[in-house]
Length: 191
Ligand code: FMN
Image 1 (cartoon, rainbow, N blue to C red):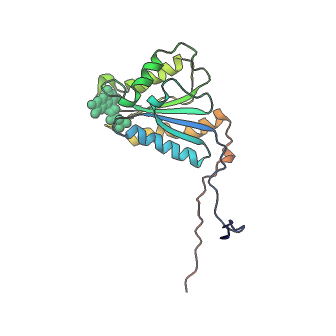
Image 2 (image 1 turned 45 degrees about the horizontal axis):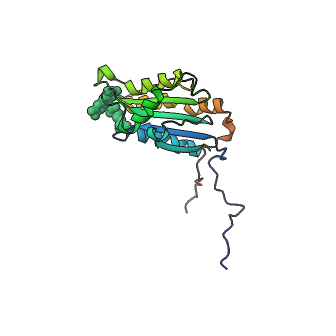
Image 3 (image 1 turned 180 degrees about the horizontal axis):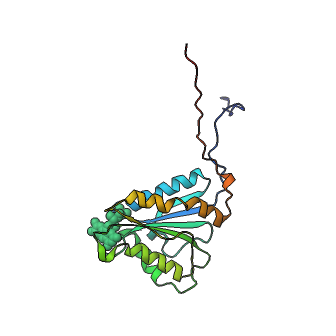
């Protein structure tokens, strides 16, 4: 039989973070992909920090939100209405009685555009308000991205305290996070 490759003791490779495996669900409502891209960015950062991440459209979770870990929702609005893959979720959420989502921890970021002035951020605002009404606990104030202005800057501003706030709320110790590079570069003198 072929010999099995064992990692060498002296290999300098670093693990990125111990996988504590705290669940983090990233849900998006997205027609043209911006909200989905932000959700995937958070998921990828979360995996590197040891979270067990899962990305899905909002409609996959109509009727079910987890009480373990946290859920971050990134959604757009279209003429004030939900994106195609968020309609069932929004209808379900609107019909929930008070207290139905107690124990759920969440954060919302909205992708919008002020060209639609009368309905700017309608859906993320509605999702945030309805989650709170149903008894879920907000982790971060809702963020607003304006695609007509500084869309990515708006996201970064909302996102800056994300991991610190999440870690505190979920009991993930900051020292468990090792974001050091996977490889070290050593200078070799020439000549
Ligand atoms: N943004 C809002 O804030 N409110 C709206 O009512 C709204 N209506 C829109 C209608 C159309 C036809 C289009 C093309 C965009 C609209 N937008 C509105 C802007 C989008 O929500 C914004 O571009 C968002 O980033 C799209 O996200 P997505 O790529 O995840 O679908």
